[in-house]
Structures are given as structure tokens and as C-alpha cells.
Amino acid sequence: MSGNTAEPARGYLTEQVTLRYDYAFGEVVGTFMDGLKNRKILATRCSKSAMVYLPPRAFCERSFEKCDSWVEAGHEGVIEASTIVVRGFEGSRPPPIAVAYVRLDGVDSAIVNYVEGLDLSDVEAAMRRICPGTRVSVEFIDEPQGSITDFHYRLLTDDGSAARAGGR
Image (cartoon, rainbow, N blue to C red; front, side):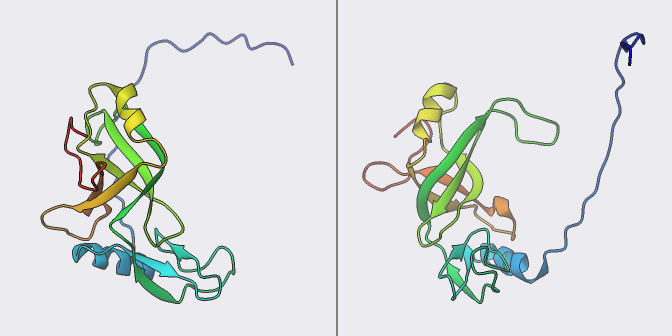
């Protein structure tokens, strides 16, 4: 086929799209969210494979059996992967924001959430502080509502205490 002879589009179009989304939790996510209201991070466990999943799963990816028990994850863990988002979009937190996948103590998988208390004025320096292997703690908001944003991560200092913005 010969080359396209159509002229390129000029200008742009601005549209506003409002979208409402209702998500039905179901048993597994509902139990997880109820735990957050009580400042507990609940994970599912498969007795056949001994795998502990967070976020919780209904079925084990190794044994293909139903996860048959709940365990409470530790409130400390290790960063597995992280990034700092420097470009925002409408409806999100203003950038920059730090996020990390963390494998909490006692579980075999990682769950993502915000990293708070980190000085983000120097993005490269902040990225070095949230590198894989860094220990963090879970910190809950004052009044948990049963939402993933009920908690966030905070870096641990060398003495095991939570670091505050700008500090180590």
C-alpha cells in the first residue's frame, strides 16, 4: 500500500470525562479492608504450599488450592521495588510522590503503598534512600476507614525508629 497522504491533525480537543466506579469487595478483599479499620494488615495463607499472600488472594498461585487461613502481617518490612512519581495527573496527589512495593515481615509477596516522611526536594537522593532492601515500618492514619490509604510506609532509621521528613 502506498504512503498515507492525509494531512496530520492540527490543534487539540479538550474533553472532561467523569467516571464513577463501584468495586464489589467480595469476601477476601472485604476481610482485608475490615482488618485495616482495626489497624491490622491481614494476609491469606495456603496450608498446602505454606505461602502467605499480601495483597490477600483467594487461591494459591503455587498449589492452585484455596487459601484457607488468615494471618496478620508484621508492621515492618523490606522494600522490593520503588519509584518516585514526578508528573501528576488530575485527581492524584501533587507530585512528587514516593511509592514502594514492600514485603512485610511474615509474608511472601509485596504490597504497594505511599512512602511518607521522605524529603523529595532532591529526587535522586530520595531514590537512593528507598532502594530495594531498605527497611520500612507501617504507619496508620489517625482514623482508618477500611481503605488501602489507611496506611503508608515510613523509612526506619539505623536504630529501628521511624524516620521523619528530611531526617534519617
